[in-house]
Length: 350
Ligand code: PSU
Ligand code: MN
Image 1 (cartoon, protein in one colour):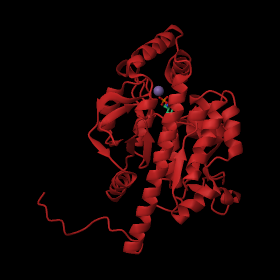
Image 2: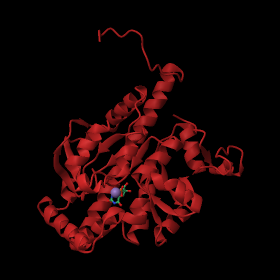
Image 3: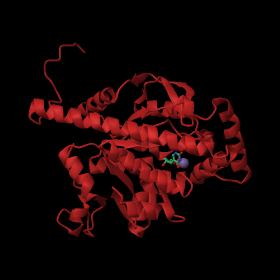
Image 4: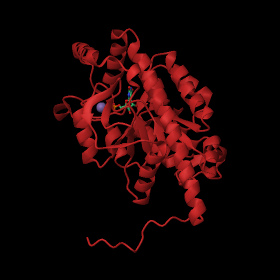
């Protein structure tokens, strides 16, 4: 999976050489040269989202966390690709200057996949959600994406229909997403059911307990776990050889010593919901509101857990990307580049 699909073009080619995008001639997606090179060389790359620092974390911590994640990956020999929309350009591999600008801009858009053409056309800045980030990462040829918490099914969704497009997008986007579960404010049971319906595999990293973002164990069981990055890479390679279209979700729990006290969580969430209801906060404004409430309610402890969760996912994303790069290199050695997808000596009688 090296090289760029036709819709993407590198920053070097924005002048036109590899420009492919429709009538305007401007590339639809800008991919940083460093990312293009790393992918072409088969070196590990990890995508990072931008909603986490445009909408998820308070200033000035947001910028520090975004830059730290990039440094963490570089220190592990992995190329980071922070993804967002800068002045209408969906960008895979934002520069430090662009990340700094986005993290300090007021009122910028939270961009899910449906919003992408709109902010692109209107030339706006935006933080990309898991859905939009996964789409852009995949279009650029990146296989691994680390985030904090995924979107999912909100409580009361059977009436409100409030379900994140993260889920349906991941059903059709064959990347690997490392998270610590879904956002703490969601209906986790319903979200796990939805992942099942959408054929999205959920795999615990060294656990069969689905993590609860702020807490190590949400109380929900999952069917499978892997013990090492190499084992995760095998699952991803198997998905690709089967040519399945959906993401693989790796659920990576926060260290139990660093979680919020689990016995406090229900009370914290109940107070946040009650306040959102009192103030009439709904729709995609709820997450920032609830997270901000939780942060103040916990005297900043939730923020520290959030940062810790993200660090853990960035670390594991780097390890899995490295394992995938090694397995791709080994496969190229054995087959001289060609991999057989279908073998004819299948003996089982169906
Ligand atoms: N997790 C957080 N804070 C966030 C998000 C996740 O702790 O802000 C973002 C992610 O970008 C995720 C998005 O993709 O929320 C989902 O939003 P919605 O439910 O509106 O689709
Ligand atoms: Mn929603």
